[in-house]
Length: 92
Image 1 (tube, one colour):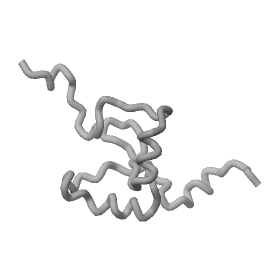
Image 2 (spheres, one colour; image 1 turned 180 degrees about the vertical axis):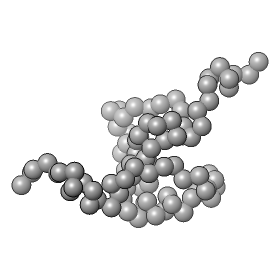
Image 3 (cartoon, rainbow, N blue to C red; image 1 turned 180 degrees about the horizontal axis):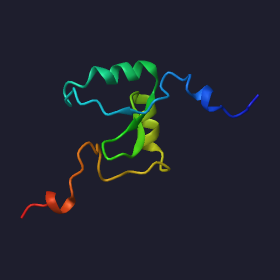
C-alpha cells in the first residue's frame, strides 16, 4: 500500500516539472502565473536563475507554518533572480 512511486507515476503529477520564476509581474502587480499555481496547490517546485531548486509557496497558511518552523533555513538572498556579488553591491 505504501510502495514508492516509480518515475512513470511521478510524471503523471500535474506539477511534476520544475518551473522558472515568472518575470511578467511586479511586487504590486504579481504575475498571473502565481495565481494559477496557487489554484494548483500550496507550493510548487521552482528552479531559480542560478540553477538551485526550491519551492515557491503560494498559500498563506503554508507560508505561515514554514516561517514559524525553525527547521527551514533562511538564505540572505530573498529572491535570487539576478545574483549580485556582495563586493559589487557594496557602496564605495
